[in-house]
Image (cartoon, rainbow, N blue to C red; front, side):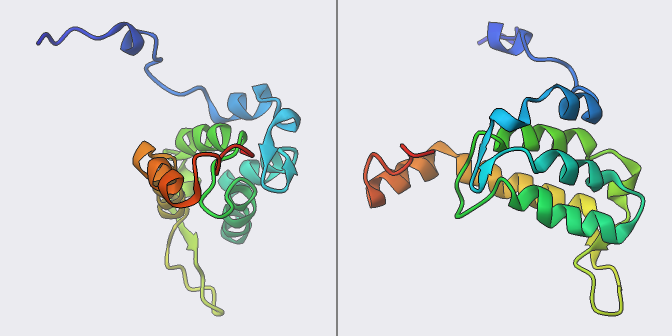
Length: 145
């Protein structure tokens, strides 16, 4: 076995585009979500890097909930995941704000919620989980998605 990269590896970029580029260059209206088209995610995604902790906490629910329903993957899920990955190093995501108590005591940074969502989404998209769903629900269970 050699350590030379495959042709597929050579085509991958070294880094993600800037998060604003991902927002601006994605045709959100053409992408399906569990609630219609992907016109809602861009505004919510932009708020994930807002300086206000409360705004970011609400954006986590709004942005990620707009493409997540019953462990299903939608057309808009992949662009949202790319955006989330692109903002993981943004300074705003490092501060505590997600999961606040009534007294606004921070539990964890936005970044933790984003990583948790990425992990959960990757798990749901895993081929083994799809195969298990097909065994349990039939081969056509993802046809509508």
